[in-house]
Length: 218
Ligand code: GRF
Image 1 (cartoon, protein in one colour):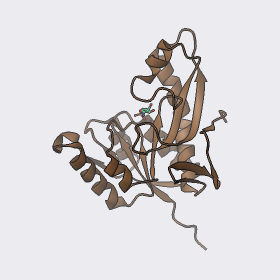
Image 2: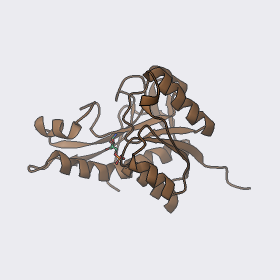
Image 3: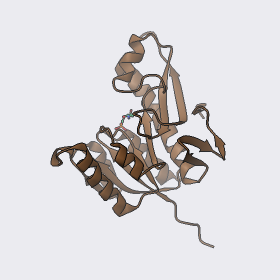
């Protein structure tokens, strides 16, 4: 019997798209069974759109400025996504705070990656804030998106030590190296049916995750 078709994903970006590239590479090398159905940017100059084109993936641009407010933008964005009926909506550097209505529309299907060890350091400028706070550890967290900003249940977390001479730029580069490993892995768990969202929690292999799984570097 033929294999069932892989789960499909829409990947939302605003910029460089190195995480998008990690997904493209993982799919192309066969380590991730996922069909990237569409890449959507809210910025027309996002380099990630070029990455999508180079990989032969459909793309669309939905610009915030073309809509009078967040709710109408989110409605238009959701309508574009619905054309592709994605199993998964992957936020990969998507610089826009989604409305509760959008989150409910795609409930349990939206993943985000946040460059900090959540619940520490939600919000922006995490790398500099980590240095300023004298933290010894930093990293990144993949989580399901809920209506609470950067507050959805964690899935996978990778951490790195903060070095004495670290700058925000250096830390960011090392965090991204981790992100490119953990984000496709989290998507693979979802695509295979092992990872689910239910009752506001992450569930892995039928058990509630009380905290994100720690990525051990392998
Ligand atoms: C990542 O560091 C991610 O943690 C944050 O936005 C950044 C996107 O980077 N949400 P890129 O566009 O994937 O290179």
